[in-house]
Length: 307
Image (cartoon, rainbow, N blue to C red; front, top):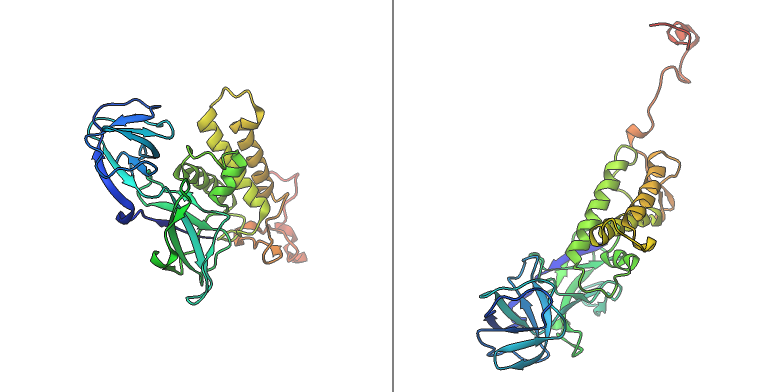
């Protein structure tokens, strides 16, 4: 898996203003100090980019100094808060196998919404990418279906290999949130990192690291754990729908992890078609063992001995 962050460039930011009043969450219209340069059908970043409560919304209409938005805001916004117009709302990831090859869209994991709430930019992933591939990211308007050219995108070469054992999209789909744009990628990534950290801590004394990324069983554990953490955060304790019970999801995943820890199951690398190598500490030796000679018998203890 290859991954990198694509920062949002200034070239798609075409107008700027400030909120003129205080607004609670759940509104679809806001007054600005001025709307010069703002256009219907474009997008606005409400709040300072990189702040966890910033959000991107599409403009449906403009009247006087009032913007009407296509969907309700998730967070409150306050007087004098910054508002920036974006020409696009998503990033699309492309790759090519060589500098002379054609760009191919990585459709399994993109487009992704521009992450205005993440200071690093939008997280892009290619679950089957190689270090030799070249990558670029275009801007995409999911409403107008317009896109910038790959010719204008910055090429990224030899991105570092990701340590992640599953993609964000895999977790989204398992949670039933594939089309839920209110759950931001950074939030899902936090659950993924927590799950992987627990798995790594549990398996570190058993297997050599890095762990294989080609084990569907281990991937399932990470996905289920991440979904469990997300459901606990989203729905809490009072869950009527068993499918949304994060504690049960987490318990099931930890049960599978325990089978690896206890060596009831063996971690299998499906790419190499062999078992994951055990660490040196995973096969402890005991005395006496097969190497014990007859003359060593006096050092062999029996259950009836006292100490």
